[in-house]
Length: 208
Image (cartoon, rainbow, N blue to C red; front, side):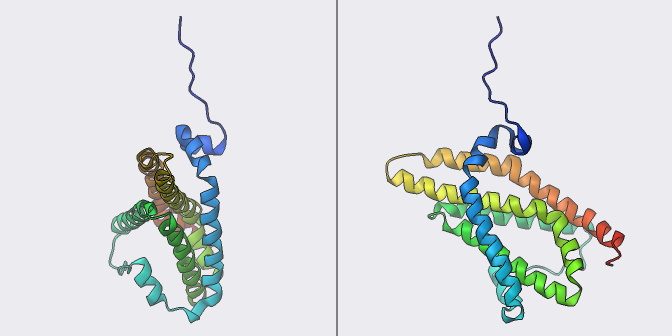
């Protein structure tokens, strides 16, 4: 006699992307929405403030970017992947400090992107800026916000540990497993789109 398969089958979009980790991702939903709200608000604020905020100041906070003009396509790809993976992991782990650093990272990313979009739109056009950001951004931004949500959950797990409930170790293992198996691959996919599909789309639309 065969034993029944007691594993829960996850359906829908989340089930397709995250598989067995779907329940964990759903539990991160409220924290993801908090990060998304902070990101959207700061994105709008960064765009509206425009020239009143120096890009140099924001680059100091986000980490200075190298001059990519002399990089070939593979070097640009590797830089984008390393930059996004390293910063997402760092700020996720910093979530252990009460959960606030990952939220700050989401807000800072939104403000930087909003200010960058404003400056880029002045130099080129709003259509050019949208074509340059949207194709990979629809994957990259939710992925980074998900890592921030996992970081916030680490902070709450530590607080609950001090209260005598929950376990930080188990929460960290869940976050690390999600990061390695889902977040890193999604960031790699977004980088592939950024260095391949995005330039082709801009040429197709006659923007370059």
